[in-house]
Image (cartoon, rainbow, N blue to C red; front, side, top):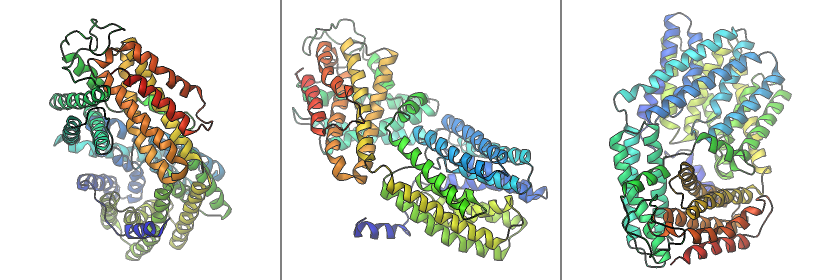
Length: 598
């Protein structure tokens, strides 16, 4: 890292980053943590309440998502956390098997969470609760009781996590819709000023990307929330504005003037009709239906999992690193005869499980290490105070509140609080262990886990950024070609065609994110392929705009001819290095064939 980068990251240790309001999430998490502890205290078994708190982490998943989606994700998280504790209980007393299961769970959970865009806290807690459950049973706890208590804590967290929807059932959907409307207005204004013969470059490309992303997030939120009619109507209007601006840009590129909306299933068109030979357009309501369905949010889980599982992919690289790092951390901690090997595995997984650039993941590891050091000091102070009973309930709930307030604003400060929280719960699972031993083990395991994660991060996948970007560009090519097949066949209204446009729309949004990370990791090797990615993005948006333009979408024969160069690109294995210039020539040829419509 350069000196300016080091100074920036040093300042980040204490800087509070901008963040959406976290009080609602933090209060719910604190209440959810307090409930099982209070029940345990009232029953005279506070330690059992601490075991039940393993299921409370359910409340952190999809905490601000729309109601229907939140209910599903939290329910699956509850089942996953309970199953992880069950696996931990099942492998108790078998340290080698425990480490192997920890590694497998870390890999599988990371794959599913990243592929499906679950978001923070991701796969981490599935690994953590497996280790704590294993520790509890190893120290004599009844395995069935541990699993049952975890499930009870998860159920109570689910109920509390859904409670705010009684007051504001569609807050998330409304905010996403308002953001999309603003971004689309800006994009439409820019498209109206686009010079003839030019595409979306520079500032206009940024406006288009912002509008596309905001529209995608809004449809995702509204669909996840059960499609409230008022918000659906607002989004349909915004979608039409977005599509009109996209079609305008496509028309500007092709020299075809914008026309009123027509129906995609208007049978008056023929394969040989060109842009100037169209009959009068018919009812535009059919277009609204097609346009809305193009951006109904995230693709299906099956599509996301299949694409993520196709090598090479960013997700599989992440999973491979998580597997190597957690296995190495477990091995090293075991050789050092550490009593809490799962802490080392958890720390290794925590550094890598969300992915990102090498720099971002390295900073995460440094924050984790420094935050843990300070957190151990705070934990020692808490032990000196020796809170018991209701005071302990209050301390744990307050720590959970602080974690949620800090985690999006400063990760290092959040870890300072996470450490005493995790140790308090962990000590309840292993009563009787010397405090000094627990603190020392946690320090060593943190250092081992972070060191193993950073070693794997910097020694694997040196050429991966270039390959990953090429692989994602191939996904854009495949998605673009499928939409062009639909254009050539004049079959834009079928269910498959709608899915193809949705997939292309999604891959275009993802393409920019993947390219940005790849450039940060290996600028020199990636830069030529980044230009290819930008050309493919321009082509993809042009093809989408053609689907929405009442004239251009009728040039079926022209789109059939334009597929040839794309087929040449797809014929080459993506793992075989091919000069970026050769790929870009094929992309330009496709674009020129499409532009020949003018």
